[in-house]
Structures are given as C-alpha cells and as structure tokens.
Length: 217
Image (tube, rainbow, N blue to C red; front, side):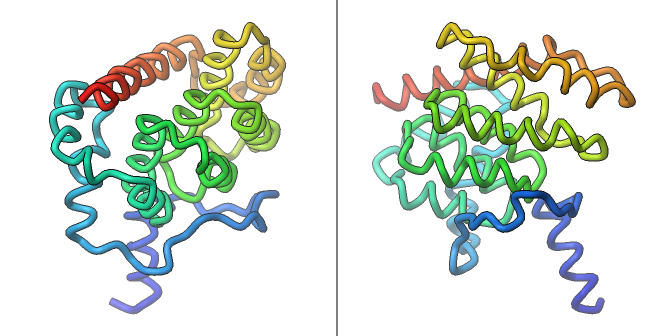
C-alpha cells in the first residue's frame, strides 16, 4: 500500500469522511503536538465514546474510578487529537466538568467541522455552557453551514442546541434560522427538527445525570 492510500484510510478512520474548504479554513484550532499513546486512548476514550447508545449508569460506573485522575490536561489532549472518538469524549468530559475555559477550542472545532460525529458533542457542550460566546459559535455555524446544501453535517444538532439555550434564556434565536433550515432541507430526505431535538434533549439529560453523579462521588 502506498503512503497516499494509507493516509486516506487513516483520515477516513479518524472521521474525515468529507473533505471541504470553508470560510473557517484559516482559523487556528487546538492540536496536540504528539500522537496519543494507545494506552491513553484505551483508558480515556474507548470506554466512553459510544455512551449515547449505552446506558448512563454504565458511563458513571466506568468514570467513577477515574475521577481523581481526570483533569483539564487530559480533556485538552482528547480534544487535540484528530479523531472523532477522542474529540467527542473530550466534549463530553468538558460538559461534565464544566470546563468553560476551553469553550473556544470546542467552538472552533465545531466551525471547522474536520471530523464527523464529534459535532454532536460540541453542540451539547456549548448548549450546556449556555454562554453568549458559545451561542455565537452556534449561530456562526448555522450562518454558514445552512447555506451549504451539499454538506450534511451537524446543522440539526446546532439548531437543537439553540433551542435548548432559548428555553433556558427565554430567547428565540433558533426561530431566526427556520427559513434557512427549511431551504437547506428542501432537496434532501425528510429531517424532522422536533424529532432531532428530542434526541438532543435525551443526550443532554444523560450528561446532566452524569455530571451530577460526577460532582457527588
């Protein structure tokens, strides 16, 4: 296998399944200087990255013995890895630990949309933080990606995240994107936004339960 083919396979496995250039191309994103060690990934990523299809109790059980070791550095290492699995776990941990100080790392990752799947985690985290800065990242994302009909990324999650913060803040930001959203889905298969929000809400409720358990252990 030649090096070019090998690189393409590695990128696809990491989640870079759709290569695209966007207006956020020049934004500097957080990236690790070295590749993560296999033992680190086995310990901090493997038990957690598929939690949204598992039960909350299992996630709490696996996190409990690691709580004393979990810190901001570990979370940043997860977010700085170029792989959807590590990044989504980094987003989950950011929510659980309420690490608002790394909100810009997550927001820029969302805007650049370098790997698939992780965007769901970013949106959950930004909605959980519910800051003006985080909401602006969600709006910037929708301003651009709802005009890209060929890109089916995390538009529904970003809309759901805005609805979540709207409910907390008594605002109406999501509705401002209703026309853009309807135009974006007009030539695609049906995408029920209400159904998407129910799924988002379920994941957020799970994260809240995990966060509560984490803080009470």
